[in-house]
Length: 276
Image (spheres, rainbow, N blue to C red):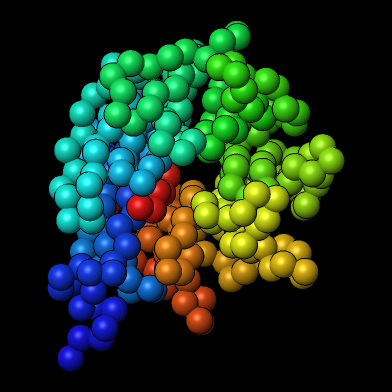
């Protein structure tokens, strides 16, 4: 007999969560319910450098263009269309607006329903590595999107950023949060950082940071605590009913009471994870 979770991901999908994994061969759609992984399959073939979601769209940064699929509900099949941005290395969402970065450091914005990209003013930035909300993480530090331009906001060698609740940055030197300036949380190289997107301003509810195979979780008054290792280098973390993560080697992880529940999804060179 199937469990309730299995019926939700293999049956009518009601209540299931849709996750998207970006990889070197394309985007994999993964249906999950709680810590149970169900259907998964390639929904767009491309070299996906990054991925992001809004309430009604999925966007991917590829070697040719930023492609966007509009979605009205959970049953919609993805149909990705080119947007005219050109080759992209990173894409992110700030509300219903997309931000994208080109290999030469150009950063532009575009409302999901619009047809044109608008370049942000100022000089091109060095080696964009991540975009989340109004934060852009680059080799030369964090930039914030303000008044149609980019303002340098500190740090160096930034590998990932998270804008929800309390701004966070993963850098080659440590994990930082933005308060009265950037304050160090933990020392050492960090690769990725994420926070639940619905957090109230200046508040963290669920947040995680990754250093290789090590994963740290925000635990309120207890600060940041080390969680069970993933046994493979983790690329990204996302949030639904539980916490999800994906490894560079293509293992989808769902947090369960006894640790991470792994599920290979058949791709390698994974670059990102986005949850609808």
